[in-house]
Structure formats: structure tokens, C-alpha cells
Image (cartoon, rainbow, N blue to C red):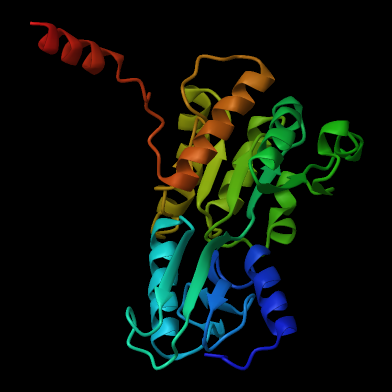
Length: 285
């Protein structure tokens, strides 16, 4: 706990959260209003990290406990919320005023590594950026990294067999996507990245290709008597079954899957037309 944090300390901590250096999420409580006698001024802040670390204060005592409780709910739900309290009537404090506090959900910008800079990566990169991903594109073909689709994203000239150097610091929140130009590179990339921490690992290709590539990768573990890697976050073929075939359509299916992974969705349709029609029939009868 750092209740004596300066505004600079708080600002630096907020930037560290948003850049992924201090966990994946935090809750930021800010005093947005006060009247009468209250223990803190408007704009006072308290930042609660996922690990329970507290930076800053909104006044101490019962109002701080209420703020921390709300911060925990915000971290659990991912939804910002506001609360107000009469410090005497609601919280039993000796101060005679009221305070309003807004608790904001802060989430680190999620990284998306695209291994390969071809047509699908060119279609996906701008779309992923619009969804809030920090996109990193890796390909040894430097001329492709100059494509207009990659303006504003990070690019590095690495081939698939150099990923141990190129992608050395992945976190459990990172998304990794293999879209190279041939099966050999896909296999090299999969073998390197499957060992890395990640939230999502996808590989493009046909079902036949997935059987062949993944089978060879796993056999190397079996031949060496090593435990197989965790495959629970691997998606291959990548994307949702939308039926599209063009690079942009494939990119949309991948982006939809990334959103589903981010929010815990299953990619199923939301339509309830049949149920609504059945209920209308019941009421009519």
C-alpha cells in the first residue's frame, strides 16, 4: 500500500498498467464530487492492482474501504461504476459531508504477434488495431513490412526460425498468430511459440495441414520423453467458421475469435428469433 503516492507516482503506475508492465488490469477510483466536510479533495485517486497493491488514497477510513470494495467488484466484472455516500449516515464517519467516487476499469493493451506479413496479416493488422490490440508483425521479407497496412504497428525483420530471439518476452495475456508463407515456417513457428506464455495461439491452414504440422511437433516431444505442451489455447485452423475465403473475410473470422477469447465468448449466434416467435404463439393461443 502506498497512500502517500504523489500525482507523478500515480500517473506512472497508470501508464505501467496500460502498457502491461503492472499486470493486465487495475481499478482506478477518483473522487468526482464532494460537499461539506470530507477527507479528500475532488480528483484524489486510488489505484488497485490485480495483486491487491494499492497506490494512492481517497481519504482513508470507511470511505476508502467502500472504494476498495467497489474496485474489487470492478476488477471482477470489468465494468466501471460510480458510488456516492453520506459519510455520517451511510458510513458512520465523523465527517459531515458527502463524496462521489467513480471507479474505472483499466486494462492493459493486449499484444497480438503476427508471424508473417502476407495478405491475411495485411488485412488483419488494421482491424486488430481498431479492436485495441498492440500489433507486432514479424517477417524476414522487409519489403512486405513496408506495406501501408502496417503503418502504426511494430514490425521486425525476423524469420520463423528466429522467433526465440524475436519473441522472447511473451506474457500470459498475449495473442500469437502464425500466418507464414509455407508449411515449414508454420511448423518452425508453432514449435517455438507453443512453449511461450500466451492467451491465444492460432495457426492458419487446412485441416490436413494442421494434422501434419501439429503431429510432427508433438512427436518430437514424445520421442524425447517430454510432456506434451498445453494445447488448450491453440486454435488451428484459426478463426471462426464464417465461410469466407478472401484475406479480409479470413481476417474478420480471426478478429471475431480474438474478441471471443478476450471476453470469454463462444462465438455462437445471439439470435433468439425462434424463441421469441414461440412465445408470441403461446400468448396468442
